[in-house]
Length: 436
Ligand code: ADP
Ligand code: K
Ligand code: ZN
Image (tube, rainbow, N blue to C red):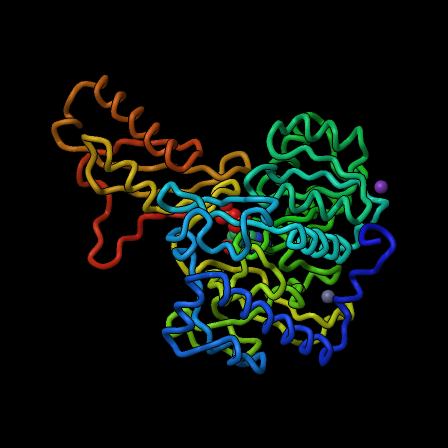
């Protein structure tokens, strides 16, 4: 059966010539599927005089046009779906810039593939059906919770679907159920460790031995700290809703880069300025093509995530290539507690409120191990010299406006006119003082 006794992980070790053949076969099929069923793909290929028959080698992929995040917004909600809604069995959504989220859909078979890659992902960091896996990613429209959940179940592990939040309860269940692995964002786990310590629980003394951490950028220093403070192995997992969700790539026990499940997600690295495809080993923007996802195929999707492909064989013996830890994104989006925030969202919100100027800074800090946003906003001269009460009213309106758009708690500080630094070129609105 798919669930327990098969060895899907064998695909991680396939002969490279077989893998390339499989990828090419799948690529041809998915390009034809996308061309036939998605107006955007067809019109862009037609414009360039391309047909699905132009794909004869894996290298021919480079001829195809890119897909970008704006394409998902512009076709909101279902414009990129390539099957009738009757075949779509699940929807997920992630945050977008204009209040409209990015929507993704899955067929039954797409969900099976997602489950398989998540199962392979968990197995690659040494988890088995003996493990008790606590899923503390949010369950819901966000892909993290359900993605990890089904993979862990397919592995045969005992799944504890706590979702995010209610940290003291998370810690109690972790102890009482004998949780051996946790899936969540690295920053949330860091907070859990702190909260555990605050109530006198030493994670070193609990059965927990692994963390599967992703959905936000984090550093090697953060890994070391988590591993030291909790006595676990902390593994980096990568994914994005547009491609499938978590389980696109993950570290093996060597913890030297993330193996990408390239039998399903074909990676390219491009120069983000020119779009030129770069050879393995060179640093640039990760571009992914889904080779086997049918509800919403993604052809050459520009992730805006910056990394490089590591083609050298890994000590673990897996033949599928690796990508390096995602060091940054190619645009100025920032992520707070696992939620994507764009400076433009904050600007739109604060400028919709009267009494402010367009001079503002977004200050990112760490307080008690959690990310915090402070928005410093200059107010007009008249208002600043006005009564305290109207200042308070303004601050509340601003806070509500910004929180309404980004869905996160924010501290708004009204500052005196002419105190925020002006820019002579590009404004640097985001000041990131977080401990990372
Ligand atoms: P949302 O857009 O709502 O945050 P996604 O899960 O689709 O939901 O976000 C995917 C993005 O999260 C990726 O494109 C990447 O920028 C970031 N991300 C996910 N995993 C990692 C990771 N392990 N390291 C760094 N960034 C990550
Ligand atoms: K079990
Ligand atoms: Zn490896």
